[in-house]
Length: 275
Image (tube, rainbow, N blue to C red):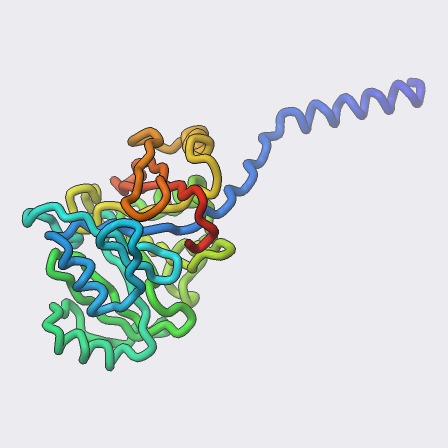
């Protein structure tokens, strides 16, 4: 066999081998975390959170508070709101410098305590309280990330949720304090956020006091939603505009998660990262 023919044959064999290898999917760029949307009975919701957990009130629309770059948005929905105890979007979390002092303050304010302050071994001190509309709030003492700290999702198949989040919104799967399975979202100019996924039965989030959570589209929302659809996301609504009373018009759309999570993706034209 002539050398040139042998080389051609070897090259053809290698080409055939590599042609049948599946292409590794490129990692999804991490989406910045954007907001949490609570359904409460009127404007007293934002007042309750402002009184008990601070934050910065913003005026782009009524009843909105920012914790770093993450919005807490309040939408009145009457008095028949279900709490989060059995919801897939199960808890939100705040971190404070001194948990014992914060719990004394919350108790003095009449806040319902579900779990008193206690030390979670090898993790941090934590307590659980509940707002007047049934939203469970874990209060932790984590000096590495103060303020709005995490969202807890609860689902029977945690691996499916972790895989879905990674494929749709990027982020880094890691253990919080080396102990708790979670996704970590960090994007330039935006506040950090943990998404903790716990195992347990749950119901879809719509109709609960924590109605949905949201990520930011850093580019054209239509293109972002097309990308999510291409990665297998179940599109709940197509992009639509929403003029804000005192701010720029935003564009928003929703997807459904694998365990009934209701998730908004919002484009905020004209705003810089973190605004």
